[in-house]
Image 1 (cartoon, one colour):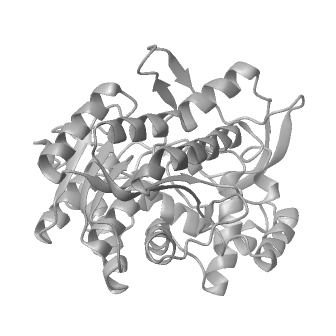
Image 2 (image 1 turned 180 degrees about the vertical axis):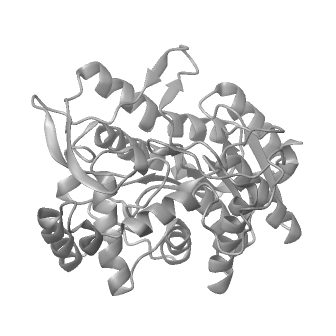
Length: 397
């Protein structure tokens, strides 16, 4: 069938297999162009490996460090007349590229929050790899079924406090700068968001892996976070999602203690604001990203997911110089948060409206990045040609 983008709200309901494969190939080319990652990981598990930072982490580990990789995700395959998800096609393309390069790659599709998935992955590690020396935790899900109680938790993106929050916002469908007002979360919504997006499942994964003896000496585990500028804090850092990220940092400190006998280390990496399927859903953030992209591209410091993850592996995790901040976090948002850049973006935030948005922001860049997530707008892809949407992920065949 011929596949075109169909956008509903902040989601594209179609994905292009050939375009997704080209996106993977482009990311691999970035990593290869920078040469091998010295002292990098060799056996890597990525929980949440099909899109965004998790996918780029898998690519950086495999093609920068020659690592064998296992990836866990929850995606839908395509059928004869119906597209699969972008994450499915990304994973298929990654495995094909890994096989062509002589690299081990195995994937698992299902509920990463479940005990059953943890057991399945552990048995595969024992059978195929013995142990893993790096565990990346990069899940982004709107809900979680607790593996012990069966309770279903749902996350919300809301401010915390007694008053509603109003600020500028970008309608990503038409480029109109408007206002959004969001009512504050109640205590139950806060608790549910922490249950979904906090650190409990990360700790459960590490506990299960450690108990099974499949973590190598010196293992490193990393979970991803975001802080951002003050303009986004009410909806992010000081909102429900920020409360969940605080829990992630709590778990990082707990895991440091648990991994000490293995001389292991847990990290929270604070990454740059980027267009991902997760960030597109957060009010206020798309407008900030559009202004940020314009400024960072002008000064030549813009990075996408793959450049961020390559730099994390190459310059922080595996070169002996992680450069943690006062809270012990790795900061690869350092270029984004430079005071001069933030001053410029803040000034433009105060000025921006629908009429001057094209001048102050990079809406075209935002839209291009969004469409690329689903395999559209990639150079060299014939989008008028029919394509097989029912391709499989080799290790899941």
